[in-house]
Amino acid sequence: MLRLASVRQPKSRGRLPRAGFSLTELLVASGIGLLVMASVASLFTVFSRAMSQSQSTVDQVARLRAAGWKLRQDLAGLTCRVTPWLAPEAEAGYFECVEGPRKDNAAAHGLSNLEADTDDILMFTTRSPAGKFVGRYADASRTIESPYAEVAWFCREAPTQPVTGTKLYNLYRRQLLVVAYVGTAEFTGNSIAGTLPNINYDLSLRVDGGRLVPNTLGDLTKRENRFMHLATPFPHELQVDATSRLPAQATFETTSRSGEDLVLTNVVSFDMRVFDPEARAQVSGTITRYPGDPGYSPGTGAYGAYVDLGAGQGGRLARPMEANSRLSGARPTYDTWSQHYEFTAAGRSGLNVSTEYATAPPYPVPLRGVEVRIRCYDPVGKQVRQVTVRQSFGSR
Image (cartoon, rainbow, N blue to C red; front, top):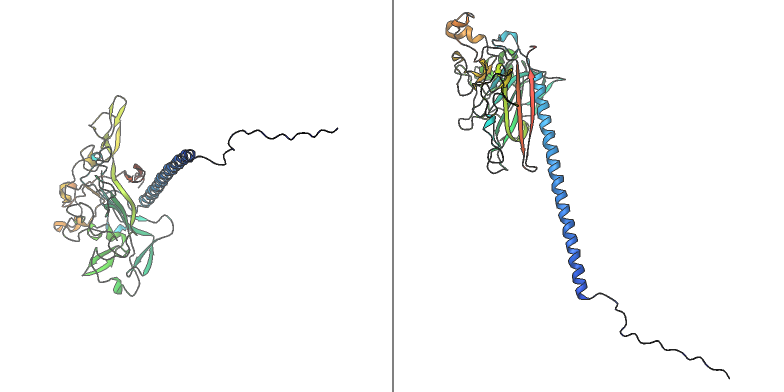
C-alpha cells in the first residue's frame, strides 16, 4: 500500500521583511548628504578663491613686468648725454627728473598706510628701439610716425579707491612724437591753432606767435618748450596741482581717448632715485642700510648708492639745488639745462666761468645712473609686488 508524502507547510517566522527605510533613517541619510554637499561646496569656494587670487597675482606680475620693460626701453633709448649744459643746436633733446616731497620710507606695514613715494616725475627724449613711434593727431583721426619721442612718466590719484585706509594711484606714460615738420593741410605753415596742455595730440608742440608749432630735439633742450612746463617766466617750472603736487591736465582721463596713456593701476609707489657716488652705506653688525632706508644715518661703508634727489643723504646730488637755477626748492630737479639761458640771461654774450654764471643747472654734475621702483597693491590677493628698473648713463 502506497503512502502519500505529506506536504510540509512553512513555519511562520513572524512579520514579512521590510521593503524600504524608516523616516528616521531617511532623515539621517539626508543630513549626511547635506553635510557632504556643504563640504564640497566649501572646497569649491576655497579653490575658486585661490584660483582668483593666483590669477590676480599672475596678472599683476605680468603688468608690472610690462611696465618695467617699457620704462627700461625708454631709458635705454635716451637721446642725450646726462651732463649739463646742453646746446640746443646739438639737437640732443633733454633729461629731467623731479623729486617730490613724499618718500618711500613714509609707508607703514599693513593696510594703515601703503601709500609711499608717488609724486616723482621722470621726463626725457628717447629713440625707438625698433621701427618708429606711432601717434595720433587731428582729433585722433590721423596717425604719424617718428623715431623720436618726448616721454613723461608720472602718477595721479586713481578716480576710484578699492582699499579703505590708503590711496592708490594710476601710473601714466605720456608719449609725444618729435616731428620737426608735419606736412599736412591741418598744419598750415607747420603750425596750428590751439592751446596747451588741452590739445590731445601725440605731438610735442610749443607756443610760438600764438600758434602751436612742432618741436625738434633742439627745441626740447629748452625747458619752456617741454610738456607740462610754463612758457614764461624763467625758469619755466613744471605745472603741478597745488594740492596733490601731481601733474595737472596731463592725461587722457576725461577725453574720448581715456586709458590710452594708462600703464598701471593700484600703484602705491613710483620712486625715482639717482646714483650718487658720494653716498655711503651704513653697516651695523650684519645689517647694511642705504640712504632712504628707515633708520639710516651716514655710515662708513662702501661709497656709491641710489638716493632721493636733494634728500640730504649723500653727496652733491643729495644737497639743495644751485640757487641760480631759480627752481623751487620744494621739488629738487635734475635737468640737463640749456646753454641758451646763459647766452640770453642778463645780456650775456657767452658762457663765463662758473662764478660769473647768470644761471646754473640745478645740479651741475653728470648723472651716472637712475633707479625707479614701481610698487603695486593687489586688492584681490592682498599682496604688494615691486619691479625695479636701473639704467646706467656712464658710457654717454
